[in-house]
Length: 279
Image (cartoon, rainbow, N blue to C red):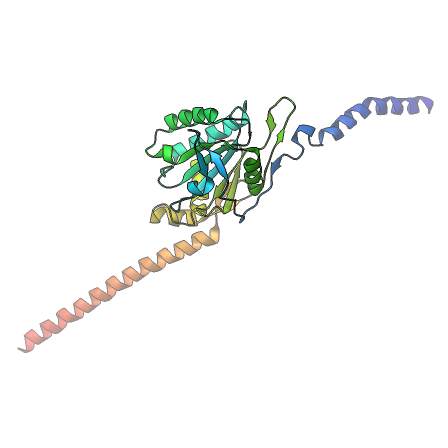
């Protein structure tokens, strides 16, 4: 019995550090405390906030929300060693495959949440991504901004983007982009470091309230709905059935109309022939 008790004690002492580590590992790292995104769908951001453009000029957000264009909002800090560059690259890849053009159909606003960063860094990023994108009017549609600590705080709080400055001068933050209506209302969040063309197109269409894209695209996008669990747009059966039923009614209406016209002309021809025979 003593040997058995000693064996259990030895095993317990051996496993205790591992169990403690497993329990500790479930906790959120201290660097990530108060970091993440709190969705504020349906809320409107303060459009009177002013930021500096890549050229160093002052501009209000209201000036970037114009001409009924939806906006893709991208919080970053330009000297981020990894994550922000991956997010910007993901936006570029998604936008590159998108037929709609920034500056013509929608706008992109990339802004730094580090108040110590200056327009020079914004300009370097702007030149890099606009050169890669190589789209007409893109320079008028993809904006790279810097701002004061006060205005940055107001904007990030408005969209629910929480970040934390670390002791080494870098920032702990999440990977997310937001889509807003032309009036500045938050309509969608997308997360991660990969945003494919289809999801960006759906989110922009949703933010624009259906005023961009061709009629065929609008019908297609109508059949999809955002699924928060998979962070993507998925087909909705009842919408597909609704569109299919509507299309069937149109086809049936055309067919019946054609048959009615054919029957009518056939009767007219018969009446003419009968009249000629009587004559």
